[in-house]
Amino acid sequence: DAGITQSPRHKVTETGTPVTLRCHQTENHRYMYWYRQDPGHGLRLIHYSYGVKDTDKGEVSDGYSVSRSKTEDFLLTLESATSSQTSVYFCAISGQGGQNGYTFGSGTRLTVV
Amino acid sequence: RKEVEQDPGPFNVPEGATVAFNCTYSNSASQSFFWYRQDCRKEPKLLMSVYSSGNEDGRFTAQLNRASQYISLLIRDSKLSDSATYLCVVNGGNNDMRFGAGTRLTVKP
Image (cartoon, rainbow over all chains, first blue to last red; front, side, top):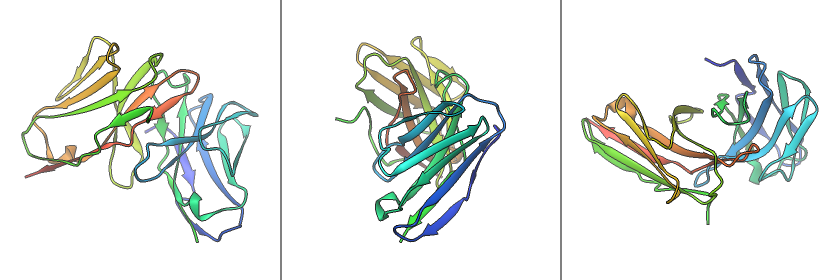
């Protein structure tokens, strides 16, 4: 399996608190992505990175920030968690910007109460 | 209108049946196409890429019709282990990967 891990796997947090999710890869891929998955919606892109310190917004970026200080790590931060951010978050990696598809991490199930 | 649309199902079929899923996409400039499989509470995993000429991988056949902006996945001789949600994925280029909401398949004995 591709070397991509997410942590934590599950988290429950309170409204208004900051939360950071971590994605770690050992594939040395240039591109990394954060998606959220909600019932009735396809996976929706939050932010992505095309290199160290190079990031860009996706379709649903409001309320989220990201950082990539090393090739292998891509962090997603919910600055002040809200109940609407309860979701399953997936990290993905790609060496070719999507031409050969993405490989996903196992996901983080986040509940904001 | 959603960028990628799929029939949500569920499709309930007996073992050995042939089942087909369809998907339409709105971005005519899309460059590459995929089918992913997602098991319950798991991550999506690449099932197969979809090429203009159509492609086959064992019991699975994928087809692309660029003129109609339509993708299909055919599963022959369904197995219990094929039960999953199948995601249609379209790459519009420049990291613009769009996912359908998925079609759920249950194969019953």
